[in-house]
Image (tube, rainbow, N blue to C red; front, side, top):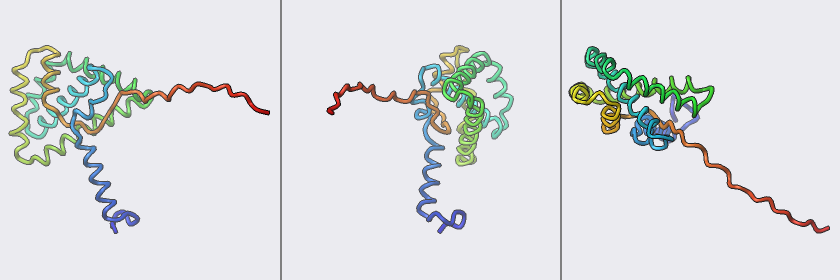
Length: 178
């Protein structure tokens, strides 16, 4: 029996933790697998890249490089943020702001967790991203392709696919016997 959850067995608690971890660490491609447009997909990738660089800046004392990235790509990042806002409004309606805030928080959390797991290797792995970005053109396509290629971890699936429509039922006109 679990001491924290007396009604759950150890196996059920382990399964629940494994499932939560699996979904928290799902690849970015899963998070973007069902977006309604290439723009939505790109917006999620750019949000992931921006968050990854922010976590790197805070963990590796590279705030000046992060600030340079933000200033250089501000128009692209602003447009991307607008597309992300549009996605959340389209998908969640009145809950859009809460869902968007939850997504950004979960994104930073899952990326920080990845940094903690990497230990001292994290900065050696992530700081070179600034050099790679410095070599990019100032175009939206260059930054979007870079973000796509990095396959940055996303927290969970935020899909914009619509639910399947119920099958069209043909009314039958049966004669009643009577």
